Length: 212
Image (cartoon, rainbow, N blue to C red; front, side, top):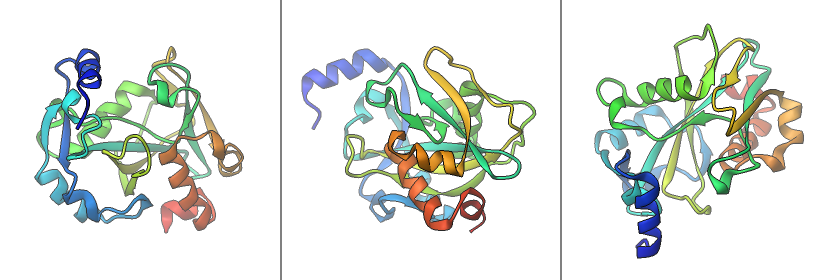
């Protein structure tokens, strides 16, 4: 249960925003950290999902919030566009994210809701043109030992030219990092990114990880 004080703060912060959630128990079969979960295992979670007020979803362990988590990779699959959090969510400030993305909203409903949400989030957060409109699903990422175990990332990647720029420059800065740069900055990444980097390290690089 979320205590009444926190619930009031969440209500003030998020207002009438709604997010897509699925049943936490149903998501138990999805492994912790990064795992190449088949997309067919995500479809049942989406089918039984529903929209709820975000202030009812946050820190509520009866729900899992589904999040498209998008990696931008260059044409050679030799670098990833990462973002540095300089403002906004306090728990993420000064961390580096490997991907962009966010909650699935009611406006994403109809058709393939996961990919529509990914498309919207990309257009909101990153300026890159032209870009291949084909998202490639990779697997899932979560952190059951974090303060937000109620979030489940569906990891996608998009191949783009090296002309990406963040739009929210008051909150983020961005840069391209090679595999060596990613590993050297490992400790600065947020937890989902570290779980994905662990998997990349085992694969032997970005390209090997994407093609495995």
